Image 1: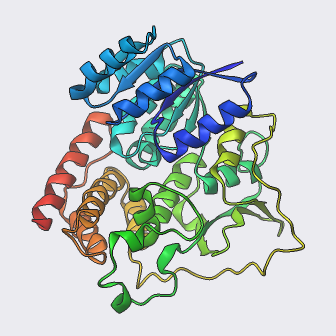
Image 2: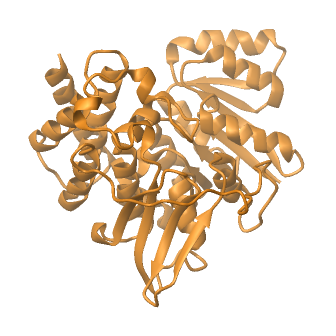
Length: 385
């Protein structure tokens, strides 16, 4: 039986993971749960799954978590704060860590799980974007297993040679849905609202990642991820827009073969693959009916209307702390957009300005990268206010 530490249990990835746990109670047991600020929701999950540990990232909520667990008669140990998240990720009570904390806040706990040699289901893309080289080195040094949960990278993992090698690989092809604004012009995007940007046509996701999908920054971050996860140069990673979201990504081989992973747009498929690998288990996701599928369309992304994708390629070319700067500036800009303080088109403008402003440094260690992250956030905030 696999024992699971679920970091980010109240988010969309966390909820999809719990559905799989409910479906396969003989295979998976929850031993640790975390949430950012939703203490009542975390307590409810503890009543349901009775983990050994529960951590609320917001230390101001510790008393509420402690008292709520006590009132529920649970023996679950209450924890709070970033240090506790790291400790919980490394604890022997779980052999598998689902890293689903959104943003840079999830990097340290993911690294902690890697140092502990865990099986890691990586849904926190910032861990790769901000500290990709460091994370991959840590995974290799400590014998951890890393399974990407992003549907695109999970698809590539499934299409690569056994063990994730690159023998005979010519290109990685990431598919993008195009988001809610596919086909729009810059003029049409000038006055879009957060509600419109979060209305993704295919996927049910959190607000931040939904906005990233709308700007194509999500795809840019995925290009950076693929660069680190699969050891491929940026010029060998291509993005194509595929509005149907049936082909999740492809691997192009030198002999002319292209392998594609296909399926309904449901995150349970990717999560289940990481949880059960090398087995495959039932997920509740309906099978594709090829007799009823409409035509599958592919097109080039519109880099002029959606410049965030090009900014991500620029960050890969610079290397060092540039991806960390890109990611941090984007987080601040997206937050400002969601709060009504920045227009939609201003997101790319802020990210581009910060990427050009923050001093370049080599990605020597996490402290350097976090310092760059903090500087980029300060720089973005100054430009927004």
